[in-house]
Image 1 (spheres, protein in one colour):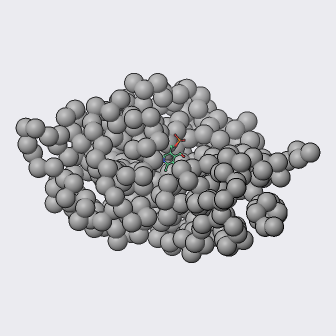
Image 2 (cartoon, protein in one colour):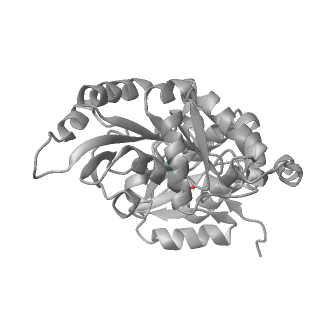
Image 3 (cartoon, helix red, strand yellow):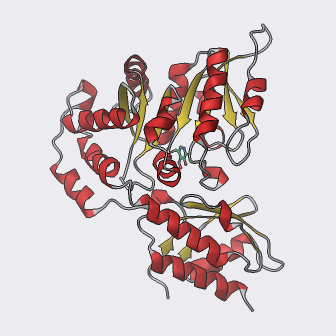
Amino acid sequence: MTTHYSDFRSDTVTRPTDKMRRAMAEAVVGDDVLGDDPTVLELERRAAETMGKEAALFCPSGTMANAIAVKMWTSALEEVIVEERSHIYNMESTHMTFISGVTPRPVRSDRGAMDPKDVAAAVRKPNVHTPQTTLICLENTHNNWGGAVIPLENFQAIRKIADENGLKVHLDGARIFNASVASGVPVNEYAREVDSLQFCLSKGLSAPVGSLLAANRERIEFGRRLRKALGGGMRQVGVLAAPGLIALTEMVDRLKDDHIRAKTLARGISGLPGIKIDPGTVETDILIFGFDHPSISVAAMLERMKAKGILALAVSGGIRMVTHKDVGDEDVDRAIKAFRDILLP
Ligand SMILES: Cc1ncc(COP(=O)(O)O)c(C=O)c1O
């Protein structure tokens, strides 16, 4: 019977490193709601500096950071342009309508990169009948497009449209460091093209909790009030900021290993019966591929892989696997072997 699973469900399953756990135990803390937790202040300062923004706000989750961003840039009766498969639109429990009272306007894309012409066409002109467009949301890397990297030129073109129409731009950069490592574009160059961005410490960077929202000082101070209103004001939270600081300063470079492993996995399973994947499309840590087999359903396939010690997730019509710190070369070999054992006669 298998006791150890190779867990490819997500990069959110990463466990904190020993150094992170020690940093948690030793963190100097204060009451962050009163503004005097030195470890949180240091994390927020480093995050703002890294992104080239005036200020940053430590949030419990990426979802809360995105929700605060939408709320801080919009008012009632307004509309937000989103990519149609984006996380903020599909997977954050409707906070745009629930919290901000704005409507999302989904736009199609080519692997997560919206055509600037389509974005321009989706901007509504002021009219008594319609919501007013005020914000555009981008996502990089793009989760539901299999970790696709959105090119910097696409950011620049969309920034231009935003400026022409007086709109703000927010980036869901949950995995912006994956984008940067894969493309060679520094994170602050993506950040320069947007008014705000959030990034997650708790995905490939392996911290247990936390996301940073970065923007100008005035909006971040307003965001701090919104965070409190949403129940996200935390007290001696330096214990969580301490591993976050290690994530931000020491865990970025290793993301390239995750990207190499994701490509190895894609090459290892492409061409097997039922699997539809073009390894050339795998750019970062996420693989999303179609699975269409005459006698094995996606659910049955996942069960059979689990019996062989491999965990993956079902997505519409296929399977999602993500590489991260806690799956190494031996886990990738094990996964490829499991696929072959199940699918080859
Ligand atoms: C692209 C993207 N944005 C935002 C989030 C939300 O982050 P959290 O799970 O911390 O709320 C996720 C989570 O997977 C994500 O993949």
